[in-house]
Length: 114
Length: 113
Image 1 (tube, rainbow over the protein chains, first blue to last red):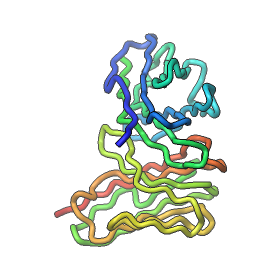
Image 2: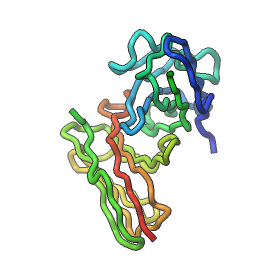
Image 3: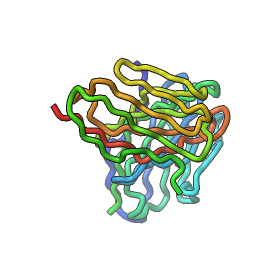
Image 4: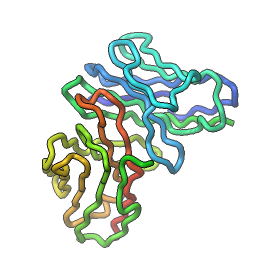
């Protein structure tokens, strides 16, 4: 069964460093998302991406964040200058098309900022 | 302000019992999904409900979407230890489902043998 994959599974970085989290959405899906989950808290929406542009973003998704689909398979989240409070699980999700509501999540990347 | 409130937050019952957990909001959702999440893993989709009043069954799990599309429930019949986990509800506020999901905090369910 097709699934969303994410790399790395765990990333440790120092405050102020740039990180890139990578996702491979399900191959025929058109909508892509990033969410984060701080330890012990609920899953929070960051950004949605369709047709090579951002379609919606939350208040969390400030200028330090960017997303890109550099090729036909990868979808990346970049954090330019990480802060301690960026430590969280980051989940990528994908959805097939506008008529389908289901979002399928990847296993997540645990980001630890020290 | 929490858009989606889940209750109870924690529930521990004996194997074989029935249970219902709830997901409530003052907002209308175009769709609502239920996920199950294991520690350190991503949410796994269980079901999507779209139409007000809709009922969907997945083996011993029954999901219902409220008539006004503001609330949902998950009922488990004859709970088993394998049902233990965190159950999350998440909804789309926009029509067409183009926007991001709004998640509840979840119900931590423990089924004791």
